[in-house]
Image 1 (cartoon, rainbow, N blue to C red):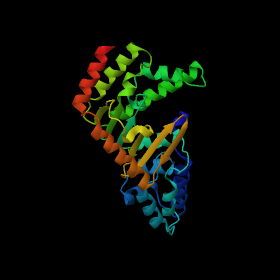
Image 2: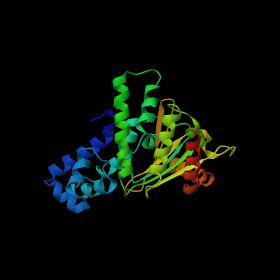
Image 3: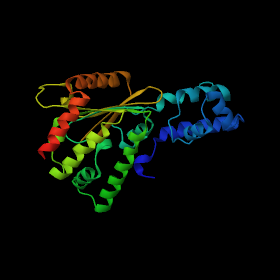
Image 4: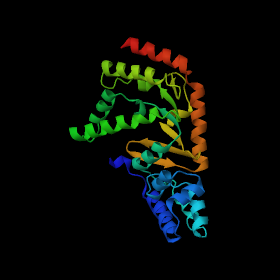
Length: 269
């Protein structure tokens, strides 16, 4: 398992507490699953910390085990910390998300990158890394893109024109990347819009960001710049990000016009 796949330790701690309380109360995992409305495998994933223990599961387990609020209270500690967060934490939330809202300025979003494009980015890392690390990161990025096959999840991307005109890897690699946009954009669960240059001041000038929505319809905002990564779960913070994203979508070209725009750029390379 890659280091990026590791879930937050708070998930493991909360899940382990559920398991300990359940065992002491002499309830089986199957009984907890039936009472909470989950399948046993889902409960197992939560108890082992591979999935975020849901508020519903914690409340049901609390009541069944007579924990008097001790299990239910752990829910408030399972969200990302307000201070700088880690990529590993984001990846754990990303794997479970049902909706993605992604705005990018200078580079192609990771979920849309071709292997060649990703390899050029990884190889240009500063300070430099060895070839083995480059290939490991490229492989992991390609594996992450399997998320796009989750037909029950929705993906929305707004990409600034600057990212399309930054010739990462040269014209050939970039042309392949533009072709990838057109292919992915045809999926019924993917919306891809291009924000043309020339709009002047706009909400996205502060940099890239994305917002994830969990299966329980909670929003998580993620931002990164020059190695500093933050993740936010507070209602005000995520609401502000979604307002910005909505404004960017209104300024961007529609999906059909965006596809035509991409085709024109590809023809220039």
